[in-house]
Each structure stands twice: as structure tokens, then as C-alpha cells.
Image (cartoon, rainbow, N blue to C red; front, side, top):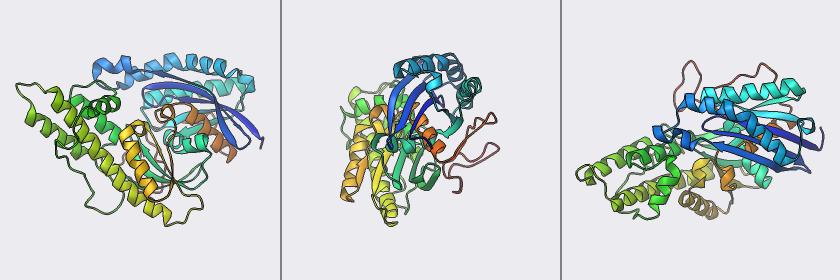
Length: 363
């Protein structure tokens, strides 16, 4: 295996079209270029992501993002050692757009093709940014997913807890919609929360009365709806009440994640890892209040806390290129038979938490 590998990564699982070039050298990774084309303005009139519009936008922008990434990195296709692409989970139209683009590049150049689980991209990001050693505890907390994972290797993940309904990012988006705030909801709710009193409204902390690391956020969203309706006057919500609702909601999410992190850390540390570390990734990890709460918990256990830069917490292709390099170095390869998967649990041996069906387990 060569000491230096340079990969192109493609990401199109939701509403960000991204391409990146990442290089592995001397045992560490380096991001040579990362391009992300967002779709916020495209979906803003609809109050959320419209899958068909997202897929069309990906198809239009993927090749442009690839060109920009290669140009910024100062490399050509001939300088690459492989192409990595998100093959799931995600909105199937977007995932398919990325997979087909990657197949075209691989077929035209003869480069190896590596399919990547989008969640593995997030989970392996601390390896790219901090060269973190296996095994480490990961809290993957995003718009569509929330789970505690012990990351044992590039393709070895043990889930020890997760959400049984809404993911926190989904709850933030729904909260923003209920309070007439713009999308994406996470940053909007966080900005309002900074102006509010987190103790003004009494919100529940779901599942804290039960053992284990599983979480629930659907009831918290319902509690916010009832609290909002209780203070509205003539169909209007006062600015102060909106800020207090956001602050209370954010505090409740942070408290739940902090307590469940304590339990997950205890379970992880019981295995006696030689270099214990607690990492967090995903879009919700960009929330400063939540990140601070998790850092406090980690410090109480004397465990290193790893949070990638904010730009690498949200969807990006650098994490996909890196995860592709990790898989490739471990012997992972995919051919033209690589398929797009709307559902793809990281720990496929664990029972489904969110149900299953013809398309497989949701998580």
C-alpha cells in the first residue's frame, strides 16, 4: 500500500452538493480542497427540503463542484488514486446523483471507486482532523440521525444508543417552523435562544427516567407546541416568548444529550480503551450550547473531547474522501455495481431502532 493517497470525494445525500480532495500522507490526512454548494435559498419557500428539487440541483452542480475542487487543490484526475462517494443513507435522488457522477469519473479514468456510508463519514471525521486512535466514543448528532457509537475501525461500529423517534436536528427544524423562524432551523433557534431565558418554560427531559443511552425528542417538540399555544394572543407570538421558548427547548436538548453522554461514556470506558476519547460530529454539533455541555461531561470523566471544526460538522465531501481513503487502505473496493441506498445503518448487527421495511432498517 502506497504511503500517499489522494482521493476525490463526492457528497449529495441531502441538500448540500459537495466535492473535496483529501490526501493521506505520513499517517495523517490533509484537506487540499473542499467545495460545498448549499441549497438553502432553493428550499426556503417550502419550509424544508424538497427531495425532487434537491436531486435536480445535485445533478446540475456536481460536475461544477468537482471542477472547482480539483482546481483549488491544484491536481488533475490523473493525480488521483481513487474516487469516494456517499452511497447512502439519504434522499435517494440525491444519493443516486452522486453515485452516478462518481461512476462516470471512475469509468472514464480507471480509478478505483469506493462507496461510503454518509454516517461513517461523520464518524471518521475526528480521524481526519485529530488523527484519533481507535476505539473512541462518537456522538453522531445531525438532522436525520442521533446515535452513540464506539468506533472500532473504518468499518466497525458498535451502536450503544440512539433516538427512538426524531433526531435533534429534525426537532430543531420543526421547532423553527412552529415558531415562524427561517430554515435551516438549528442556527435560527440557537440565535433566538441567546436572547431568551431557558428557565421561563418548563420543558420535559424525555427518557431520563429510564436506564440506557436511548433518546427521544418527539415529545419535546410537542411540549413546545403546547407552550407556544398557551402564550399566543390573537394568533401572535411575542418576541420575548419566542426567545424564551427557543432557550428552553435548546436547554432541554442539551440536558438530554449531556446525561445520555454520561451513560455512554461509562459504558465505553468500562472496556478500558488505551487512549479514551469522546468525539462529536454532525450538524447539531455546531450548536455552541450543546457542544459546551458535552465538553463539560467529557471533562468530568477525564476524557479527551474532540469536536471537528464547524465546517466539518455539517455535510461536506472532505469527510467522504477521508472515509473512502480509510476503507481503501483496509481493502474496501466497489465496482460499477455500487448502488444507492436510502437506508444504511452503520451497525448492521444491531436491531433497528426506527422500524424497518422493504428498504431496510432506518437506523
